[in-house]
Image: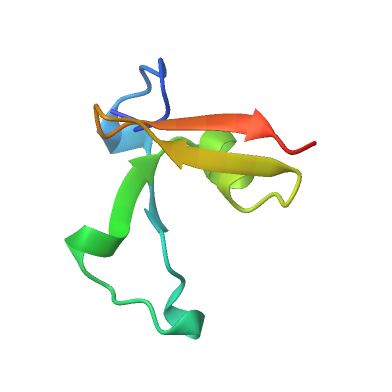
Length: 65
């Protein structure tokens, strides 16, 4: 499923997101990737949101102050 906290969108409908972009030296491997639904993938690229990894491996999105 989408790795955003509480999201239940199936992985087959999700998009791959690179935690460290390839253009900034990130690798294109599973350690640098996670599945996010379209809504959360857009938030991951939105500078007004911050993304925090939780102990469960999920990610929490919250607006920057």
